[in-house]
Image (cartoon, rainbow, N blue to C red; front, top):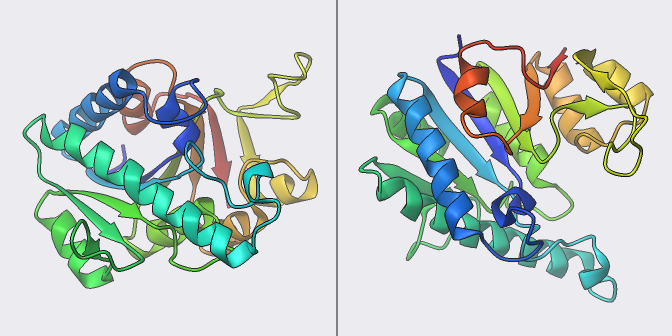
Length: 234
């Protein structure tokens, strides 16, 4: 159903419930799912978060300068990107990490034309270091990269199976939205993505699917059009 996707993976997802660090078993499971989607002929770009190591707006950084804290968060995403690249390459696929902050020893600098060429050659791309700018989240980076690579859809993989009226972990009575618009997300102040990311997707007519990573095979199911999670429309 979708020929080119941008997959957003949170750092917390890679920690698989441990809260900190990378779950080696889970990251290889994610790599296997990405390989299965690649085998369907889908071109894949991935944006990874870094919250499993450091979050610039969390308690960890309460006494830090916001710019310094955000730069630390960006570098955390590079760690996750390299780990995911290694897991994907162990399956025999070609994968490139492109960083918005230049770290040429471990990742290519992000250049859009080069990224498009990698996708045309069937390589899997992992975008690290967010947008390279402080005050912008990796959700905003995912929205931006989805537009830049001309993705058909932005897939946001989370620990819950969609968008709810409230956090279902703390509010069991919360109800799920099978489909919702970006305007309603802003109006209801739902904490799906930050406002900049939501506005960017809305203004550029980018659909988004929010779904759970907890069940193996969900990425391929979404790609093939199964009604999982919550669909967000412009």
